[in-house]
Image (cartoon, rainbow, N blue to C red):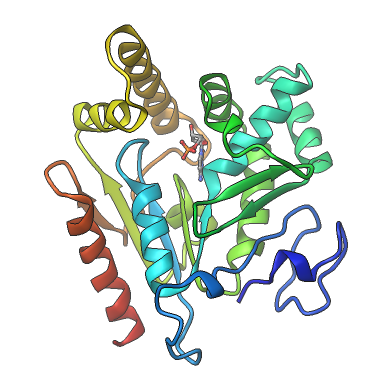
Length: 264
Ligand code: DC
């Protein structure tokens, strides 16, 4: 169970919180947003990890699945993006691990799942759109290579998801954040198809599209080859190759796996 943002004081401890939450992060419950509000509350609340490279469709699948199950959808990449934005604002080097960790500790990063998608707040400001821009996207990939930055992120992500009832997506959720997750999905797709999907999503063509594709390839390379928690499927993950699958088809497959875990 997660708690409602409005029920908690600014930086303090939420009086009704069911698990310990590190003070800089607050997460809104999506229970009230579910498409299935009559679902039995006594059902076990799973931790579902969805990992994979950029453009494989993780975000869409994770948010649709979370909505179907009445779970919170936590996008771990948004946290790396928020820290990257903070580093840009403070003119900090993306290679300076100690400064980045200090910035993380000083920042208040909030993930707020909502019906219209996740909102990300940095020190109270809505940065949801800003963190999708090209400079932040590139910086997020660079700040995420540092082991101490990752340790800070992982600790907070664990605290957020510990109560279950979450679909958390990222690169290392099944391998590092929740190695005991109830269900692990590794969603992959052919690199060319992923690039094409990104271009369609962003409605871009020509040189701009070529630049986005090149960025995506470079981030992929960095995510897969970094020493600290490189992108890889957990041994017990269900690998889904969505290259020639539609979004609904992938969702149906993932939902079926989740329902099996719930004993439905
Ligand atoms: O999922 P995304 O594209 O928003 O992630 C932004 C960057 O953050 C990406 O380059 C890899 C990094 N990341 C990570 O290293 N581990 C995660 N669990 C999530 C994201």
